[in-house]
Length: 288
Image (cartoon, rainbow, N blue to C red):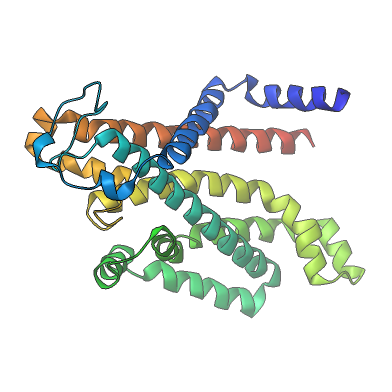
């Protein structure tokens, strides 16, 4: 019972000095829960079917956020769009975090020519035209889904995490405990996984958290420009794209404003959590 009390106290202490992060956490949990659970009760094919008798109806008891130019329920599109956008953001963050973290860990520890070659690989990927390749992908693969779209984004988004982790590894591997392990003949794999990894994990986690907000914005931006999800799969960016029309901006605010506000508050909440995690690790490291 005491252990549970201590855990609860530690959780409360973690958020006690940052009410914004506490509110952000519950907001993200609420939005994620509504989008995940609500999507199971929505028939996508029925939702995206055009109904010319209900074009651009304002919000009402039947349609909480009105209908779009095809007579489709905007609220249900918002629920599905949130699920799609969050799924891409989380999937890209996890994939790029794992790939970039492992790459940076190996590059930083190995050093020498191996590090040089691995860094040139990073430089090569960062010179590739991200937007142009996404446009080609969307044009050539008309039946792509969340997974394939996330993989394409991951190809261009793992390098910053690799650089951050590598920089931290370069600092840590000069410490006495690493040098002592090498002198004792400890295998490189064990040094990386048992000694280096725990000490670079804080930087790794913070980078992934902040990248989550970036990936959310990138997906929304690509969908806004028409290079994201296909038309039959709504996302927050596709709903936001209605704002490109002056008439929609002036007369049909319900088509784009809820999505715009949701994108803003989701990214803001993720950033708040990222800053809180960053401060927590800094205080913990300073206390040691």
